[in-house]
Structures are given as structure tokens and as C-alpha cells.
Length: 304
Image (cartoon, rainbow, N blue to C red):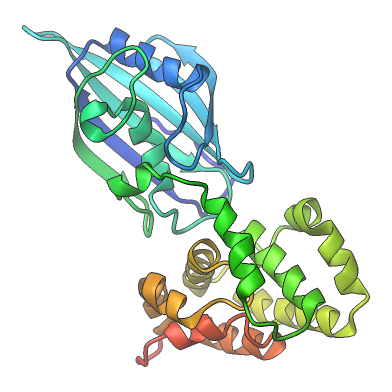
């Protein structure tokens, strides 16, 4: 299986092997029509682009609908000779940033380019059925077909949740932490948000935070808690739980019921690793409310 590679040593990915009931020429034409035309990506309106094309191979890129994250894909094809045209599809998608749990995004990156009307998709030039023979996600990555077709703009939910959340630390801290948590995933080497992401998305909030002693103290204290965990085995479990909270339970402070409902698996993984649990407890003492929901979701278990 040929994959596009990623600059991040820890990242989510998905591989798919399938057979389309069409010639490879038709399959390639359909994928290119969706990527380069006016076709609407049903997975939150992402934007595809064609990076490179060669005989029976396509290299693609997809930027999420909110313009924050990029994934790359490689499709290779095999023509099968027989009484009916068939095409073998070998596809791989890889996140280009540090990521653990992708909520089926990499799988959907691929599936949404070959699915047909039978799957609820809208073909552009050729409608054909594709049988998925094997789907291989990375650890914690998803393969939920229902996640591939999402109606409505989920980005509109986040500001609404922030507006209704109780104010624990004052508007400055609340807005700053909500902005960073919602927009910037953790950096793989520091277990902290990327400075470029924070500056690019939360400049005005950060400027206000610098003038607030409580906000400055909370952020610096939080960094001291997460720094020892960086590049350890437990970092993956901590990052996975934080990514789940960021995606499913945005705003500040996150909802305990939301954490319990959507991030129970990630919380259980963290619970059995003492360093992961200790980091949560330390950081929650720095910024009361930010990690409380994640801690509450941790089951009581023997730690290692």
C-alpha cells in the first residue's frame, strides 16, 4: 500500500482496499471530477485538490472546512480484466499534524471520493458500486460510514456552547482558553498547542491574557504540568483524551456529561497510566474547570 507520508511522527491514518464495479478510467475520472469541480464534500465541506497524477495513481490533499487541518491521500488503481469492468482501489490517507483519534476523518477522506448513490453520495460523472474489501485505520482512528456524510455546519455549534458555558475564571481566561482549546491541537513534541496556531487563531485573546496575572499564571502552570509527559508513552493517551474533548466537547469549561458520553474510551486509556492521570490532576489545579470534565470521566482503575 502506497501512502503519502506525514511530517508528524504520531498521526492518524486510514487505508482502504476495494473493488469498484467500473473501469479504472471511469473511477479516476469520477474522483478527479469531485476533487477539481464544484462537487460539495459531504464531510463538513472540506476542500480537495489534486497534487499529482500519473498512470493509475492520484496524489490528493484535503483541507478541512474550517481551514485548520490538512490531510494527504494517495490512490493507486489496478484494472481487472473480465466479462465486466472492475477496478481495484488502493487508497491511503494520512493526517499532516500530530493526531491520534480522527473521528473517521481519514477514512471519510477516501470513501467520499468513490462512494455512489447507493451509499447516499452524489456522483458527478460516473455512478458505480464499490465493495470495500479491507479497511485499516491507525490506532484510535475511526471507520464510521455515518460520519462521512454530515449535514449542517458543525462549526456554528462551538461559539454557541462557549456562550452558554458558566464563567469560572472571568471573561479573559474563559475566552482565551476556549479559543486555544477549540482551534489548536496539541503539538507532538511539547504536548502544548503550537505557538503558530495560537498566534494565528487567538492573537487578540492572547494579548488580553498577557495583561491578566491569573491568565498568565494559569497558562504557564499548565505548561509545566504537561512538559514532563511529552515524548513518553503516556503522551499518546493524554493527547488522545484531549483531542476527543476538543472535538466533541468544545468551549470552556467542558461539560462533564459530554466527556462521559463521548470520551469514555480515551478516558479509560488514560486512567490506567499514572503519568496521564497525574498530568490531568496537575493541570486542573492550574486552570480550574478546564480538565475537570476529563478527570471526572476517568474510571477508577489500577494504574501502571
